[in-house]
Structure formats: C-alpha cells, structure tokens
Amino acid sequence: MDSVRLNLVKAEEIAVALFHEVENRNLIVAGKDEETLNKEVFQLAKELFDVDKHWHKRIVRCGENTLHPYKENPPNRIIQKNDILFFDFGPIIDKWEADLGRTYVIGDDPVKLKLKKDIETAWQETKDWFDKQTTLKASELFEFAVTKAKAYGWEFGGEIAGHLIGEFPHESLEPGNYQLYIHPDNHNDMFDLDSHGEKRNWILEIHFIVRDLKIGGFYEQL
Image (cartoon, rainbow, N blue to C red; front, side, top):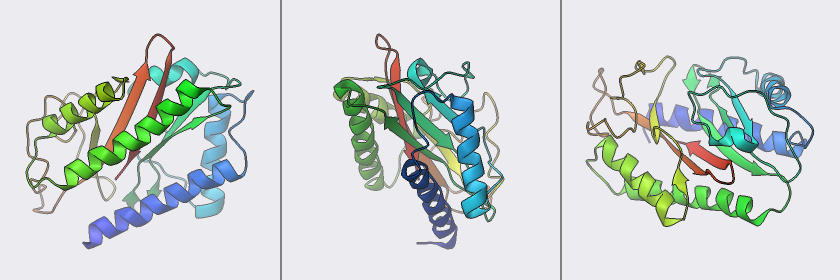
C-alpha cells in the first residue's frame, strides 16, 4: 500500500471509530432533530480525536430527507420511532480527507432493515468488482451501481456513485464538471494518474431509495 493510500486509510479508520462511538453513546434516538445530532457528532469528533475541520458539509438525514442526494439541503427533521437515517461526514485528519457514510435504523421495521443490509452488501460487491478491473470508465462504474440497485429491488438515488479523495484540498471538484466524479457523463478512465502523475484514490458511495415509502439509505467509504 502506497503512503497516500495508507494515510487515507488511517483517516478513514478514525472516522469509523467516531461513528462507532456515536452508537456506543446512544446518541441516535427518536425525538432528537437532525441538526442537534449533527452538532453532537461534531463535538464528539473534537473531544475524541481533536478533529474540527470537515472538507464538505456534514450531513445527518432521517425519514423522507433520506431521499435527497448530497447537494440538496432539506429542512431539519426530528428523528421518529422506527425511523431510518444516515450520516455523511468528511473529517480532515492530519491534512488527510476521510469521507464516510452509514445508515442506521431505529426499531425493527423489516423493509428499512433490509434496505440497510442491501446497501452495505451492494457496496462491497461493487468494490470487489472494481478491484478486479485494470481500466474502467467512471460512467461504467456508475452504471454498475445503478444496476445493483435494480437487482436488489431498489432505486439508485444519487447523481453520482462517488468521487475523488486525497490530501486536503484534493483536485478541484468543480460544480458542473463531473470529470473527477463517478458520474454517467464522466467517460475518463478511473485508473488514469492525477495532474501530479500520482495514482488517484476514490470514494464509492451507494444511495438506494424507495420513493413511495419516502425512505433511503446511504453507504460510502474508500
């Protein structure tokens, strides 16, 4: 593993530990609004890991807000009993970016629990497929992720299926320019080297939704 990848993995491990601590402290409870939980996660990151910078907006979404892709800013909602919610946080750890997304289910609703499980499984299957490739257009990976959603009986809810990540700040992700995103309009090879001649590292994100039930789930990491 090269040094860049190693640093990104270490940053991600801290983000994973942060999310585990959120669960251990039972911060995800009905009756709490998204913004309050978001602030609690931020404060915990500062307390435990001295992390107070994030390279993108911090996201906590529950209920019908889980339908929305990243760029949207839905109104603050209160977590309900038997709810579904997801986190999307991008902490900067020793100048290295992490980007982690996880789905949580409160209660025992079988559809929501299956959605959560299917997203996690589909993410791993998509990564395993990607790891077997030596050349691959970003648009092809996006299509693979969309097909995965259909195979599991869900709809793919994101405009992208991932993006570049690296040392902060990484190569510019310009609005309207999808050449560094896993997007249907990006036909570049994901294995191309970056502007410095180095191997690129990518985040894979899976967002499945059910429009008629107004729920969705999300999972992302390196």
